[in-house]
Amino acid sequence: MALANDVANAMRALELLVPHPEGSRVSEIAEHLHINKAIAHRLLAALVEVDYVKQDPRTSAYFATHRLGALGLRQLSSSGVDAWAQQALDSLAADCEELVRLAVATHDSLQWIAKAQGSNSSLRIDPVMGQDAVPHATASGKAWLSTLPPERVAAVLDREAELSTTARLPLDRAALLVELEEVRRRRYATTFEEMDAGINALAAPIFGAGSDQEATGTISIAGPSVRMTSARMAELSPLLLAAAESISSSWPSYAYLAAAEKLTA
Image 1: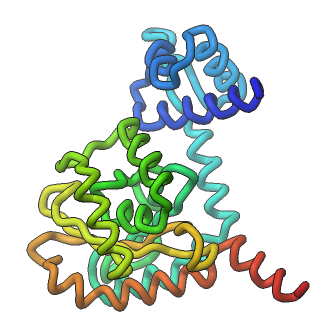
Image 2: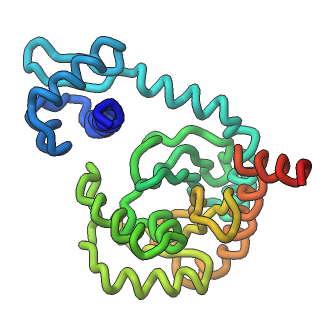
């Protein structure tokens, strides 16, 4: 159990360091992880030893190295993201001529990993790759939340306070829960300048593990509010839902496991 806690805290320390290139002090990491400074120092020293973290000799602050980013890029490459998502993202971006983004879900977060942009629609790794979507204020976050059971929704919203990015609108849990019911009925979520001024978006969940399971990711369309009106979002929604279904059918691992189960049935 102690080893499991150390591993979990080490990974959370990395997550805390990534958004802060100027570095964070041991006391800050300890406070966020609710552990004492001696344990935090030991975990950071272990990460320094394997070169995922460095310490600034002038300030004593710790910061994540590019080794962590390289690991993420290798994982994306090995997952075949360009093979199983590029066509759907490129096609949708070309049709809507707006920014299209793909996000993947972990146990308690949703992270953007790739995008395609309008007529220049070749799939590119997003500049904020690995950044968590703010659950209550992004279309992607709402689309994902709509697939989670109530206790998981509550846990994700509780964790939201740890994110390095903040929304323009505060969290109103009661209103959000009502909105999630509408998202489930409509099958896609929307935001109107809730995260960034002048930007509206819509997003649909991707059910890579099956339609009766939690979403494994989301696909979204975002654009200037002057263009992305409620009416235009409704027009784009069939294209968005079709792209989500296409990516769901080719989602890594889950699609392979489903095929394997059919062969052995």
